[in-house]
Amino acid sequence: MKSPIFVSDHDERRLRRLIEARRHSALAGADREQLNRLTAELDRARILSAREVPPDAVRLGSMVEAEDLEDGEILTVTLVLPQEADAAAGRISILAPLGVGLLGYRVGDEFEWPGPGGILRIRVRRLLNIPAGRP
Image (tube, rainbow, N blue to C red):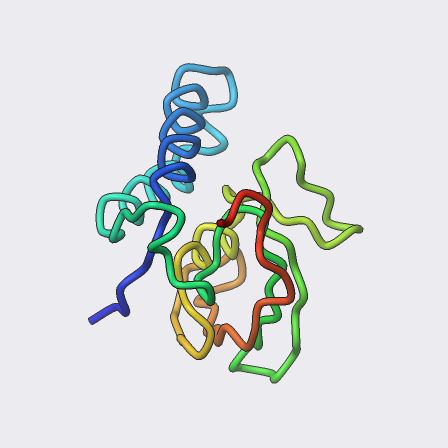
């Protein structure tokens, strides 16, 4: 069974608007699989007020240090909306496979997620910031 994930009501609203907009755009075909995965994650998430979300849960704007459990590589990424993504700067889109996978997990959680080269096995090692807007 998957670990529970925690999403703020603010992030949920933003992400549901993103999903709806993308489903009705020319980009829908390219994003369809990730949109479906993000929808499924939001449907299973515990939606809480920003004050109730555990401070160590990955949210939009979180800078995350994650470990690839297959090869031990440490990744440092910031989870952002698609229009803010910049791979060279370490900002990954919520619609990237790792982005959808990270949302809502807490420090210490491990998860498996489908990626372009197979199944990703990831551990959330630590958060390097508390996203703006967090009380």
